[in-house]
Length: 572
Image (cartoon, rainbow, N blue to C red; front, side, top):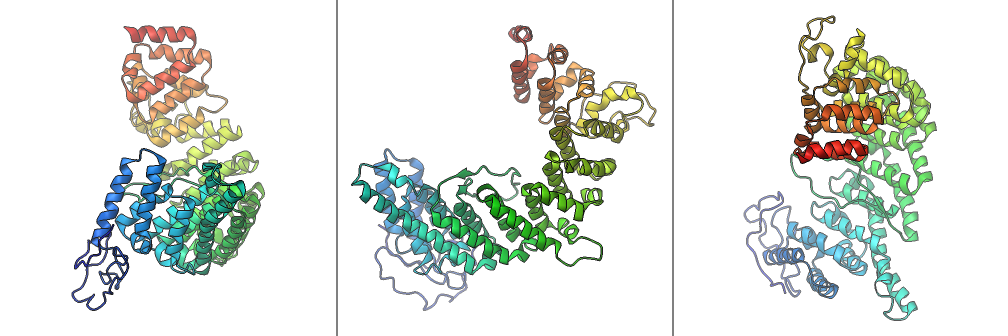
């Protein structure tokens, strides 16, 4: 299907080096296999073989055909079989080519586990040693990941067509088919263990290790995609899906974690390796909790045993490091109460405010504040952090303040103290008449004098200031405060806003969440007062993308009479 070709010049794609004159002279081998199995040598990258141009064109057309879809499973299976026949014998060249890689990633999920196992067997070679080069290739790594992920379907062959053959024959075929893929996953894991340090530090190889950890543990997230330049990754953790795994994977996961622990030093010095250790802990916490606790303690023992200045915990150094701080965040999130208590008592006590003011260390402090919310330890953390709230605000580390408020809401402790602290920090605690101005200040994260352009602390508001400068962290802060037992201060402040301000609030990306939270958490009487002030604004709210969502929430929480009033206004 693919014609044999001799290309003088290959596509310059994927950031490959340009070919130097005479670089490939005399290096080309005579390709003996049918259909141009071997690509050309010497097109850059030190004489590395490449997929020939006609093959690239073929796999591009395959990709286009995959986009069109298939009428039935029989047509799809026949197509997959034909393409894999063309891949056979040059799977490595296809996997390490940009176009071939993308096509294979889309084809493998449509292939049977047995077919996937055969592709991986060719990529790994007889001993599996060739996995290393493919996994550490920008394109090849994605293909190996895609192949390994298909182990989640290893039980589907018995469910697909139980009538085919006898029951015993069906079981034998399933074991044989799944055994191929299972064996290749185990072979890959062995290669990773043999070259662990190199794999976990490699930009592409490390992703294969992380996928391998998920697979051995029996849980998968969405497939990895190439991030576009200039885009930020979302901080939300991907949703994991559990699946049944072969018994051999339980033992291999333990072996792989032991090998990783032998390279624990890399987890605190290398950002890429640190991400691998975070994945290891996350997977084990989900599937092997006892193993996870052992790993957590061993990592903490390592971190706290490093040399540091006399009288200073080495953990304080790691908390301020870009690579190791991420690992410590994961450790904090997964740690049991006893480990959190030891962490605070022996290493962080008396240091929280200083760490909260640090540009990197403030993030682990946020995780610690969140993790301690369900324990009495939170009371000690709060008493220490609350002393530095104004300084933390001045440093712009609002995540710490927001998390402190959210932990107060979750633990149902220290809520009054938190509110009073915020009133003081935003300079609206005294005189008491300023309390009703707290909502705009909290949402904008501006002090009373700055927001109302008041020269002195005793200055009074001469004119109303339109609602402005609603920010993301301010919105989150008020949403956390809306979960407190006592919300009268926020609701009183909300009722002082003009109808125009309420419309601004409802139509603002950050403000709409605030208004929705305050309305839905209010009592029937309090909600009625807010809706009374919104009268005359419902039509404009309904015409706003964000305001319409607030209106929907208002409608769902409103009484029958309140709904009638809203409906009448919308019908005019």
